[in-house]
Amino acid sequence: MTAVLFDLDGTLADTPRAIAAILGRMVPQAPAHRLAGSVGRPIAQVFADLLDAPRASAQVRAAVTLFRETFAAEVVPGAAELVFPAIRTLLEALRDAGWPIAVVTSKSPAGAAEFLSAARLDHYFPVTVGYVPGVPGKPAPDQALAAAHALGVPPGECLAVGDSTDDVRMALAAGMRPVAVTYGVAAADELRAAGASQIAHSPEELAGLILPAGSLPPAVVPLTAEVSS
Image (cartoon, rainbow, N blue to C red; front, side, top):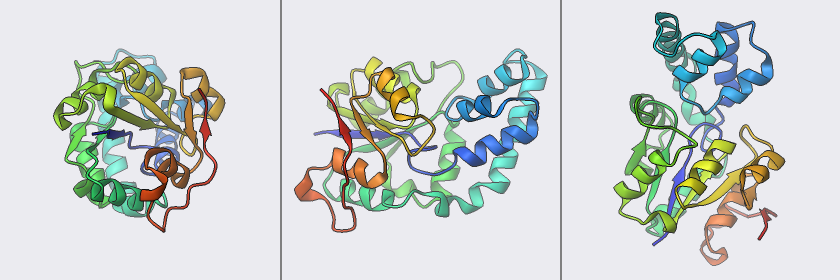
């Protein structure tokens, strides 16, 4: 039985721009490319890097608290509208076909649960693995392996779907097959350089890479995705 592990920000939901905008208001001196590149990483490490301060410092802790409060107030209420088109249909098709699925994200467990609930996606996922301080995050394999274990599926039978090079590297380190998407934060050439051989440019293409053609629901029409040997 194949399982599918999904990243959250930039893969299931169009949150990267909102995240970068909040970071930009909080750290206005940071270049735009650094803000965009921060999406999908543990937020404490993001602020440690942007503020050039120790991760355990009071400055970083205060920034993390403010970011989470701002995200909860400004982004979470509209979470359902941020879910990418065709994602719900894909998740329903996977669920109906009996595929085990999980979320693996750099959000905290509480933050991931809050967003998934607001987005009305939580009922699709029996397992959500968020980032916990003290456990290596992406691109280390730990979170992906924890999700596979919780689903009861060997790592070699898992697909890991994500929009960042860290997602691709995590999948490879865990012995899983990475499926990359370009509608999030990373470009196709960056994802290929990280080791992705299957790349989807839309959620519709993603469905075509994951599900056998005969099992695709009518609402999902796959286009041309990248598959290389």
